Amino acid sequence: MRTKDSKGVTRFSISLPAELAEQLDRMAQEKSYANRSLAVADMIRAQLVEHQQQFGDKEIAGTITLLYDHHKQHVQAALTDIQHDHHEVIIATLHVHLDHHNCMELLAVRGKATVIKRIADELIAAKGVKHGKLTVTSTGKDLPS
Image (cartoon, rainbow, N blue to C red; front, side, top):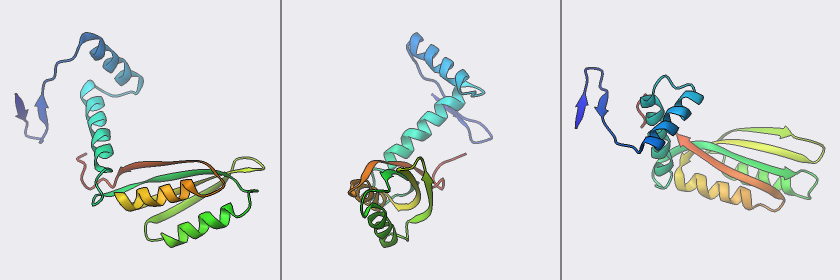
């Protein structure tokens, strides 16, 4: 059964094994959620965002994190070339010197899911990149508050 109140909030009930409900309550408390409903809503929102990244026509936002040794020949030039080729979806970058050899680069991206994934794959596969990761989120347009 579902009910909708005057504020547009839909209420529904779910059944969980007792141990799972206890773990949910513990997590909600550890993460400072005011109540179980807010924790569940955030988990649903996270899964919806994850689900949307699988569809090429959906606009997503996110970050591409790259870790590399800047002493490796041509790595910085290769990464810069790739970034310039995709300036329309790379909206910001941050370059951090972690130590004498290792640099971390963070690229904020926004665009169609398939394009973002392809660019991330290209950057992560570039010779000299030690580790890379694409993290996606929604642009927020399609998510309720």
